[in-house]
Image 1 (tube, one colour):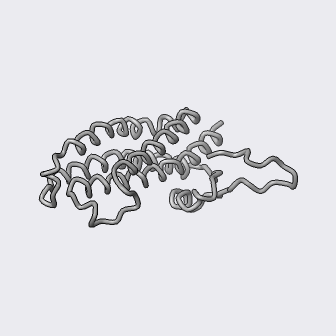
Image 2: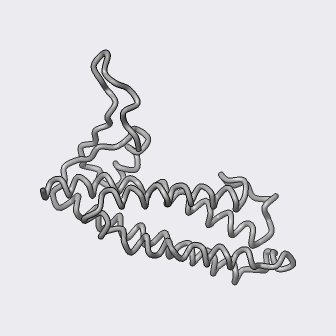
Image 3: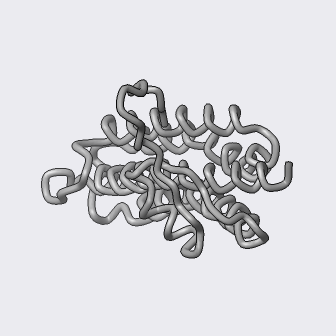
Length: 178
């Protein structure tokens, strides 16, 4: 049972990295919007709408994964998911900035926005630390998708990482999901 829980913790650590990445994109898009410099700054997302849609999708997926895992996973990420609930209020404050205040001089709003996103992201970093401690306490490896190997290696450099997908001839395909 203990090894199973540790493996589940290890698998769950990979999930929020993609959520953290899109949260960072949204944070940056919000700052650019709040300063009114959308045309002058190249971001990996087109605008706030695209950034928010990516966060919403990643958040929904991660929440589902945590719910499915339950147990120690749910305990480890509960504070982070609770912090994520503050995202709607943060977005509303960004949307409430009048167009005439969207300038480079709007540093107080930009700072408050940045800090708001950082609080959300920090909660996930803290959860990842808790999970990493569980890994260090004895979990020897994890199973993850090829796309997640880099992030998994960052979380647990000494972990054995297995990527599923090699099957005997004639075996079913498309039987795995993230």
